[in-house]
Amino acid sequence: MMKAFLGVLFCFIGTFIFAQQKISGLVLDEQNLSLSKVLVINISNNTSEYSDALGKFTIEANLGDEIRFVKEDFYRSQIHVSEENFKTNLTIFLKRSEILIPEVKIEYKPTGDIKKDSKYLNDSRKLASLKSSMETYMKSPMTEAVPTNTIPKSFEGHDFKAGQVDVLGMIAGAIGLAKKATKPKITTPNFYETQNFLQRVKNEVDLNFLKKYGMDEEQIDKFLVHAEKVKKLSKRYRKDFKLGAISYELQAVFAEYQKINKLSD
Image 1 (cartoon, rainbow, N blue to C red):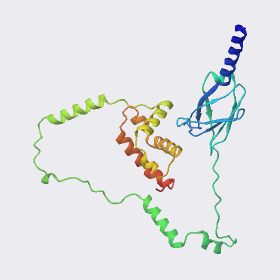
Image 2 (image 1 turned 90 degrees about the horizontal axis):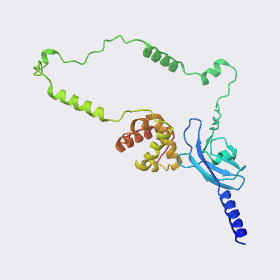
Image 3 (image 1 turned 90 degrees about the vertical axis):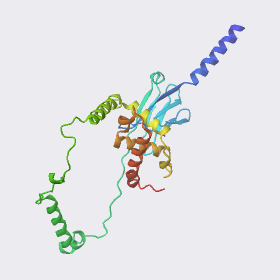
Image 4 (image 1 turned 180 degrees about the vertical axis):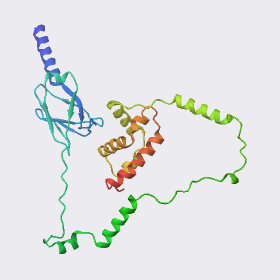
């Protein structure tokens, strides 16, 4: 009786463990940058999860289940779970979909008459002449000598340092060399070092100036990736994490980013 009970118990435990299997992985774009907010759907058992800020995800799955990865502006991807997927982390690549450029409408409809159409489609004679003159001027070499910004010797005071050893200069130079020797060497980060640096920026740097413009977490992640590309922040600051300098760099990049993306508070 006891053996039968234990057999049923082990079968129940085995079934429960099997039902709780999970797969994990990382979602990247074509440039090997992590993608957050990717919807991960198990079509077979109708469950879903989202990838985190670093593109990582975990979802329950059984052998043979169909898993789909969906994100706006990207092509959908899917896999069928194999035994290998339970042993190692997956790496899923999503390809960005093409952006259709709106059709440009020409208000004036050409008639075929060159004289008539040129009045509407070509620059005026005065404007064309001005453009030609400006182009010629910009391409031509300078004919005037550029004055040098120096003070005549007759107006210079006596040089009291002449023939003397600049002790203070030598000390300052030695201090500068010592500081340079103690600074960490700047090296190019790998993928995971970059992702860890961006996560630290989100945790420690005050990003309220982004939230003031109504940017959500995904938009902030997108901006940080843009700032990383423009300023190489992880290469310069991941070993010497200077909050003030990083904050200043981000705000400088955002000033231009705001204009390009037409953001308003």
